[in-house]
Image (cartoon, rainbow, N blue to C red; front, side, top):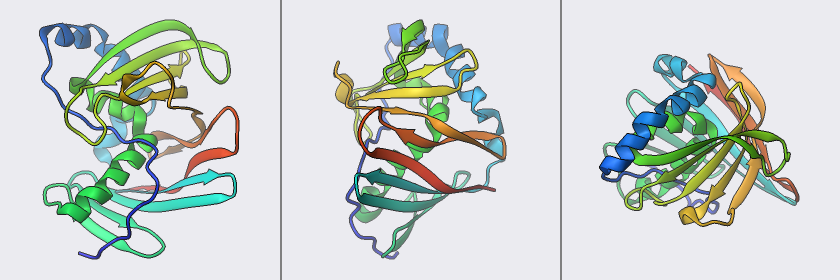
Length: 223
């Protein structure tokens, strides 16, 4: 295993697990269809054919630039992390402390890339609420709103919340990240520049309403 330098940027990372109460199970049963609608609108039904996905995660803030590249084989969970200086290969089933720390960056970047799919993948680990008409925070356009909240234990950043905004086509246009389910937003960005790759609809660009921040993906390849 090759070592990789510590990764300086973490925008947010979430993957959690918790014991579902009877009340939570009921909520998921009633609302699960909206999770499926959003995930499938982005091509989740085509995910089973994916053998490998490669992408570069980029963040530009004012004059600074950060990037790192990942190669993920979802059927075996083999992951390769690539920066300008180092490369690290590891598997989720066997992670040492270096791999575990690096994997935090992968979970973060993968979440940005495949957030619509996480709605279905994480369905048993979240509670959620669906509103048919709410004003989106950046565009100020009336859209549907789906709020999800992760459990308070497990994962890299448990208890986080996300508000997804989308139209009647269920394609996400904006979202809000709220750390630890706090009321005030921690980050608000758009979902733009969608690209259809092997049936997966991926938003390649995320921008804030103000400022010189953008988070985007390049080199997205699906096999």
